[in-house]
Image (tube, rainbow, N blue to C red; front, side, top):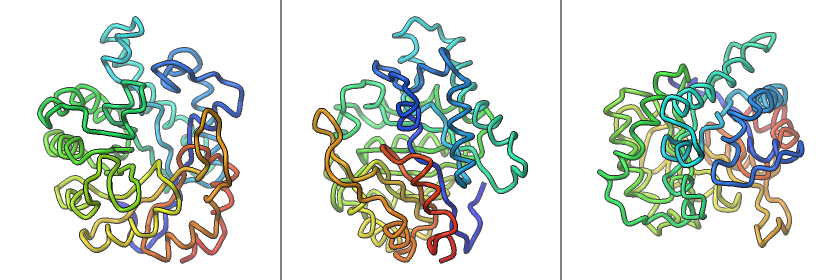
Length: 293
């Protein structure tokens, strides 16, 4: 797929955020992916809620799902493959339930290696693994998702240039279309590499957008400027709320419709939210000046 030229696309917010707001306990190594087996209807309902809020992209519940991760929770390979395919199917079904599903897309989430470790290392990177080893680990999941019917693969919350190189290599191998989104601190990846170097990987075939997610909203404008300076790919931005996790969420939110207008004015083409951004915040972007810039 290619994103429409000269058009702003509003994406969804945090899947886990909305599930938790509905009372689901997502503790454990599989996080929201556990519900792919335990309560798939809940995931479908959240996708539908974001579509109802005006989002045009649904991002699947496969962020923390992997063949190895499911195996660690007693699922054999066949079951793991089915659950990964189900993650896409649930989003497709939510889209199909809309009165007019045209102009809506399903993005199959591929989270970083660190997410499967469930120890916070997706915010540090530098796992001590080569690009080759990381490509070998990601390959089975990406191959399953590539054939599951999604419109685009979301390579998201990538903390490290080494992992990004592995993922971009797999995009070339499988022939999928994907966006590449880093988690950042300031103007560097979480592993400390310059964003200009990280975003330059978007020049590789198959990458249809590049940007940032799961970061402080305040870091978005400069990241957008850097991305636009080194690539001609559309820029995607979906930060967290801006609250800080200190055993509990504290502090004010920096995610507002006005902030999103600023990101779009700075050159972002696809805008959504990540942790602590629910359907109401996504709805606040719809019909605002942001959508018409």
